[in-house]
Length: 513
Image (cartoon, rainbow, N blue to C red; front, side, top):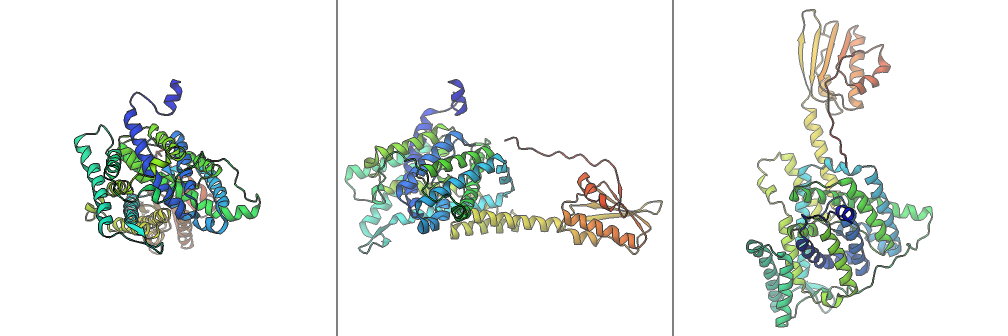
């Protein structure tokens, strides 16, 4: 039994009260989100709720980041909405299963470490964009349907009432932690607003006004789709995009929670957990999902640090669906709106605004661009991908300008070129401009002890340089080339004289996760 507790990270250091209360708070916050995302995807509300339960439970138990919350997300909903409309939910379930298998494969191949390639400016932009999206999505709660069924802004007494309840929830969440942290301020805010509405009989929007959450245990069934190549080719693009979106959002959330808790999670383990969760979600009538930054921040800010809070959140959500829907549907949306507004405020990296004058202009551009793309397209994966590509191009450009050569002629009349900086596709032209082939002496040595040949463009540049000297009847020696470069150049021994000397020792960090 002790081994089981250790497996689930239940130790004497776990604050069970905080874990349970945080889990209950997260469960309440998950309901309107899951329902809303399911409707965005063109699916029934229960499809989103079932996904939140299955994905949340599996990742809480098996995931690489205790305290992180997963469930149905808007990023996934945007990916599958076209398929849901054109082919129906059964094809969506099959897509979710396939996406899960791709994610498991990514974890087995240890691709989780690729998240290291995401620069901090991209993470800032991602977080800020997500915070703005969370805030803007709450503005819709200030709208009500008119006689024609179209949403319009509240006015008069309903608006003032709703706004007053939202402000009440915000003030409780803001002020209560300054007085006591015995209970999560978010849960207190929900209960106080619920009590005010019930005590005074206030007519305001509730969870039940969005959709009914009543249901049973998620039914198991194999997706009813033809098992043939045509089906695979139809769902594969959606599955690949969903898998990529889910992993990017999950791994970025993992990194952010790592920073907040000052601990380190396992990206590869999280990939496997997310994939397993999505496979099971597809078989249990769920729309799939990934990590949720907003709910994860609610969980962590409530004091949760272990897996228990995520398990409590998932199980509580299922209990609400099966037995407590009548009560949960009476919860005022104003309380949850106030909660999510405070999540948006806490999610936004306000420190990033203070670094505008200190950060390089390229990083500021990337951060702003990622934020804008996230807000406009609501596509977190695309925004991150664009940010990474631009950052990589800026890095390549900066390094292309840094290659330089120190030149000298020794007492024997041999000219030495000591190269500094990486030789790759971006720096080839600057590298070639350093050499004076026509006026150099008969023997030339190029020293690479402070340089590295990075790619095939660099190899080809060396090959052409040796040919230029060879045509002039001169000898070129390449010293301190790395072993891989010497191997690639071995076929040109008749032209290239490679001095075999010990290279400087380099140590590479290895991810053991």
